[in-house]
Image (cartoon, rainbow, N blue to C red):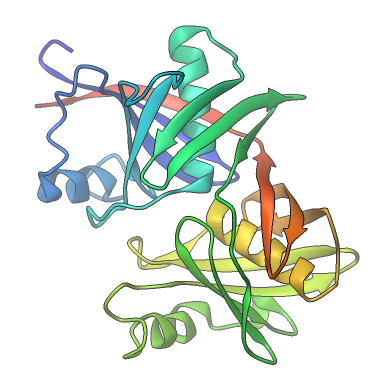
Length: 261
């Protein structure tokens, strides 16, 4: 890498990520201050998270994706995994399909008509909290709050009141405001770790789609429109939960650069 760290900037429906080829395992991912600085939109590169592409941890895998939130915490990221595969394809000229691992286990990624589709974890259940709220875990914990109009929600204060409530303050939770409109979902998301609204959230889109399926609004395939663009979630019911969950949408390479070490 010479005198600096090489990186690429990728986005998936406006969810933007710093991606680093770390197959030599050299990046100091335990340096939280460094991660926070890189993700800062005023003093750093700016992103919704940092992705490290690392060597495969088991046979049959192409790579391991390590995902760090802008505060240095770790989680799975649906749009981040799609961006990671886009970066991998460009890096290796391998357009897959491939299998890779992340913090929550094994995933599958492939190109489909110019879009990237990734498998998500099976979901054991979508819990009905009350008449307008569901809770589920799609790689990260999510609340799905059904409202008349997501655009009318004062999102940051309303979401923070939930995210920092005594029930959720320790682990944190992502909060999604959704509605069913013209045969599709419309939504906005507040992400823990980012601690702000993001233009899109892959695990949140998945949680919202499964909530719609659990409520009988749609089955099998659900179109979801975020502020950053359109994604599609596919899933099959299995008891109170879902299997064969897939997230599909666009990804794009924004720019590449080097940051001094």
